[in-house]
Length: 426
Image 1 (cartoon, rainbow, N blue to C red):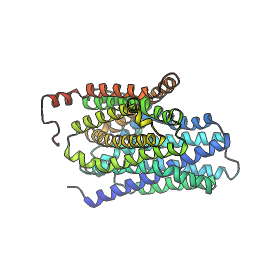
Image 2 (image 1 turned 90 degrees about the vertical axis):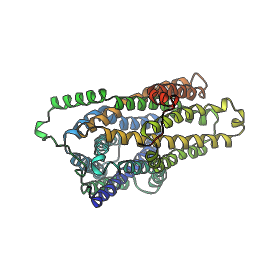
Image 3 (image 1 turned 45 degrees about the vertical axis):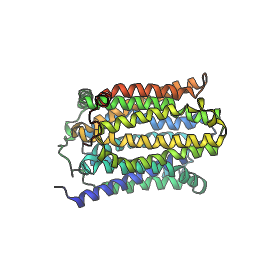
Image 4 (image 1 turned 45 degrees about the horizontal axis):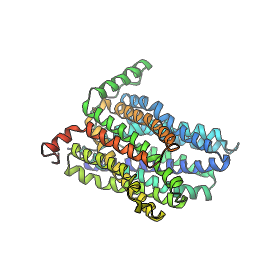
């Protein structure tokens, strides 16, 4: 019988720590991007900042997973936030003697995202230890709402910070927010729902880290359900990057030329959809089996990608920019809604079904493989927009996703055609 008071405390403290870390990081990323653009007037410099944000995730995710499984998760989570706090407070102190240089921003961004990578993978792997299995979907939903809220508010607050507050003061405040987050996380009981025995640091060597990483790959490869989810994640990421992330901005800004204000309004609907999706997915998870829910949501996502090309068939949608803006705002909201409704059940399933001693490695390997596929899909999509109608790309992505999802979930298709009771709750 779980201690409900302790579980509630873990729930609240986890969300508080996540809130402080996410909001601070999101606002900092937006404000520092504006700072770089103002100082350099260079898109390349801005792109380099984004690259330094992504590189640690791709390169270090698998190793972060190994350490998350080998060491005490609480120490990793708390220490990563402390290191991030020291990093930004140290940068603030340095700026008292020298002016802020671009190389300092690159280095700080890389180190901060390195700490965030270790922090995020470890905390995600630790979530099933913080609450009971029944409360885990709710914790994942609340975490998604915080992430989406950060995306919504970061441009607003980041713009205010950049306009009204000295960048040095904001860097100091960001460092303090990480330290507050670390304090809140230090009171979380990471052993509330845990059975794992932590390996002594003395037994961990570079050789054992490599062995542990290999064990994680083998565990993932030998688990049919997890491998299917990995391929679903990869297909979704490739098709979304290829058919949505590049084409929609290009279509709105270069094809229809709706203007910066309208484009900003359209983009604002995506995180709003994420918030709603995270808020309502818990209800559907109680009513519909995971397999059936995942099938419906992935097919709906494929159809939504196909809908981006609908103006090619319905000229009425192109009759005015207002109709185009409304249409794409609906699409962005729907994508956010479905993305959230797909993410929460999948993450919850992986957390629940993966053995605790492998959980960090499984999450880190999945994250690294999915992230690697992103730049490839983005580059191919960006190249093709210069040589063909951009409205065709979502059509290609949608067909690819639909066929792939049907193939990967052919057991659900068979259940439907054999009139099995596919939508019963688990």
